Amino acid sequence: MESSTVFFEEKGEADMVEKKNIDWSSLGFGYIKTDKRFVANYKDGAWDEGVLTDDDTVRITECAGVLQYAQTCFEGLKAYTTEDGRIVTFRPDLNAQRMHDSCLRLEMPPYPVDKWIDAVVETVRANEAWVAPYGSGATLYIRPYMFGSNAVIGVKPADEYQFRILVTPVGPYFKGGAKPITIRVSDFDRAAPHGTGHIKAGLNYAMSLHAIVDAHKAGFDENLYLDPGTRTRIEETGGANVLLVKKDGTLVVPKSSSILPSITRRSLVYIAENILGMKVEEREVLFQEVRDGEFEECGLCGTAAVISPVGKIYDHGKEYAFPSGMEKMGPVLQKLYDTLTGIQMGRLEAPEGWIKVID
Image 1 (tube, rainbow, N blue to C red):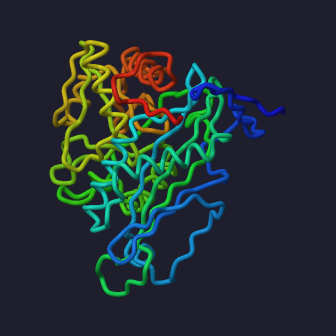
Image 2: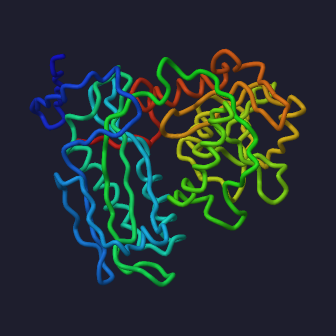
Image 3: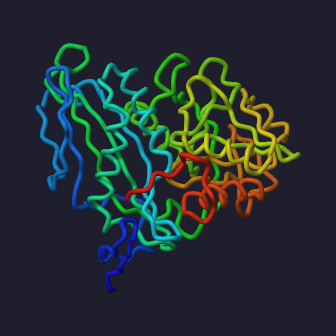
C-alpha cells in the first residue's frame, strides 16, 4: 500500500510527515519496533537528562535488581490522531502521577512528573510517522517503565535505575468490535489488602499469569477477583477495573484500597456525572448484588479497550447473565464509550487539561 501523508500547520507552515507503510486496519495488539525510544539513568542519587536512541536493547548485569527481586513498574497510555489532524495524548499527567506513586511504594526514585510528560511528548514526536491516521482504528501505544538496574544480591532496593519509554503501533484490542465476554469468579487472590494492588507494579501482573492461563483453559475470557479478606466484595479483573449499571441507569463502580486507580475509570466517572448527568455510586460492591440480579450491564475498563462488555459471570457452577449486554455492549456503557472515545479522537470537546497536544 502507499504511504499516507499528514499535514500540520501548528507553527504557521505546513510540515509533511510520511506515515510508515503499514496496513493500519489489520494491526493487532502486539509489539512492533519503532524508530526511537527514550532512556534515562539514575546513579549516585540523581537522574541524568535522558536521550532518544535507536537501540531497542536493554543491557544490564545478570544480578540486576529487576531480575532478582522484580523491582519494576510501568504505565500504559496512547497517542491518537484526532479528527482535525492533531496528534494528542490523553491525560498523561495522571499516568505520570500514578507511576510516581508506584515508584514510592517500590522504593524506587520517581522520575519527575514534568520531565516524565516531556519525555512522553518527545518520544511520540520522534515517532510521529508511527502514529496511525485518524479513522484507521489503530493508535500508538506508549509504555513508560522503570527497573532496578545494578547488581543486588541481598534483599534490598537497587541503587541504580533505568527509566525507558517505548512506543508501538497497535490495532483495536478486540477485532470486529467489543463482543461481550464471559468471566469467572477466581479462586486466586489478585492483591493483599495492604499490598500492591493500588500500584502498577510488574509483580502484580506476574501473579495473575497463572490465573488467566487457567481461566482460558477452562473457556473463560478473564478472572473476576473478590476481596481476599472476606471473598464477598468485587475488586477488579487481572487487567481492568469493573463497571456495573443498575436497573435505573446508575453507574456503580467498586471501591477498594487494593484496586488500581484506572485513568480510564476515573475519566468515565467524570463523564457520567458531569457530561451525561448520570447518577454514580463509587462504593464497596457485594458480589451478592450480582447474584440478586441488581445490575443490567457490566463492563471492564482500561486503556487498551476502553470498555469491554461482560455478558456473563460464572461462579462455581452458576451463571449470572446481564440482560443488557448479552449480544452487544449495553446502552449505558455504549454511551460512556462513545463519549470518551469522541473526546480522545477530537470529535467532542474535552474537559480542560484532558488532551495534551504533541506540537
